[in-house]
Length: 185
Image (tube, rainbow, N blue to C red; front, side, top):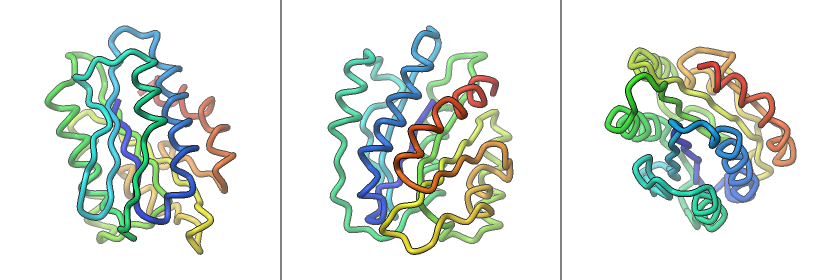
């Protein structure tokens, strides 16, 4: 499973809570031997890996890196295509046979890319046996809440793989809802 966290400027006020969300998901999945995790930040132009699938970190080491994650991005936009491509490459290069690949994208964002192109690109990724889950979180720095259709486009048009929350506190409540769906994929 690879986590991609939108590190655009508008997400700065929810980064810590998003880190807790990621850590809680890894805790829920960690007992299964075949699970490995990767985590990176992305913005309009860059990807910053916090840890990759091959780092083989203990739960404590992952948590330390997650909670030390800070990004002082000045970028006001994100690039979901970059996030999907980066996570897909990591999964295809490193997935164990028979283990499904999952991408979890956490963003407050609308799709800046052409919505149809985003949808087609995400569907191509899903065709590679990789599931894309999207967590849309409303940040106080963003005037409008994420559009469901935009988040669905990022998830390849699969509405059941989109989770939304109105504030950072609600993100904690998504873990019990998200884990079973991701587990069954």
